[in-house]
Image (cartoon, rainbow, N blue to C red; front, side, top):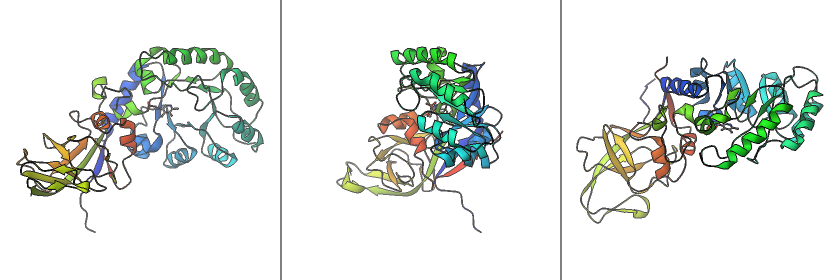
Length: 366
Ligand SMILES: *Cc1c(COP(=O)(O)O)cnc(C)c1O
């Protein structure tokens, strides 16, 4: 069999991941760490990320039961918490079979729990809606929910309590204080562990600390705050997205480049074609002149991003040649936050949006 290095790949730096987890811990030294690895660890690859964080994380959080099953079957022995909880009796059975801890956020789940066959009790985190208005019970119904859960043999004791902050990334927003006050009242009603803070909550709201912290994005070295990069927060980028130059050609004044003839040539230009497009997850709506890195130089993208390729102006980069490596994001000089701003989105969507054809390559294993 002939093996060739992949043209396009996302490099996953295990040392950076472990470093960021330690940074998260240092912000809440007393708390236990629930590492959020939903959505394929924000596009980084759930299983390698979980394996790399085995010594750092006290538990892992995923969104869906299906994700939890895959994680458990990969050999993960930590606690696994399903943030959306089970949806239906079959999913509840899967939680029990695979020892997945579940969020309980709605009445229907109470019914499925009370209809369940006797057997292994499931560990429950009650989701309290303190103002996000996504999942969870309101404070007024909490006492009744606790009473019902405690009446069920299928539910393990104690009952844990969780909430989610809606505006923790805005340091001036009064919403967070209100949410924390509601949670404080709720704590008296459940006797288990508590968990509030996502990355922004952990970094910006010391009063949001509780028994557990629940960061996601910062583990990947990415900032949860607009206008700030992970590097500025003392984090290390985990993902580097790479491709190569696959063609170089001159274009002449008056000619255009790419779909729609969007970019028009004014002076003779050395054009580089890079194997990277929205079919890999690179944002099509990227702003004009956003750079890529070739060696130490930053070269601007020109013309429209297509499915498999984009084009760059190499006029000022004589040494660039076909086959050269191109970095799309991940270097401290070209962090994903900058690309997200240029694409009018948040970095979460970019890393989550890396598609399956992009090979994940794990480096710097400890
Ligand atoms: C995704 C998610 C997190 C992690 O949030 P980050 O902003 O990535 O730190 C925490 N809690 C819940 C409920 C989530 O859905």
